[in-house]
Length: 116
Image (tube, rainbow, N blue to C red):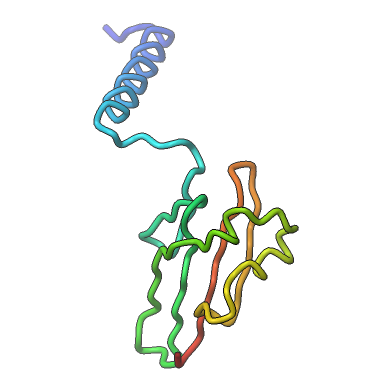
């Protein structure tokens, strides 16, 4: 005999809460949106890192992604997103920069194509 639909739903919720509790105890849980995607495999911490993308000008070579330390001037930046990239020092690699704001904060992306 199958349990009632309400019973199954309560069991699923309890199981999900148990998994979340175990993850938190194991140090796996983090604040929602505290990180952002950098390529398909990395997550950068939006408070302390930016995503660097190195695209090659040779299609056969892969694109590289890395989370790099965010300059202190960018951590404190209150500029609108479209002007925020000015917080990076002039020598920072990446000819293209974008800042994306969300309810969790700002995420920076810098992209270099070819050379350098």
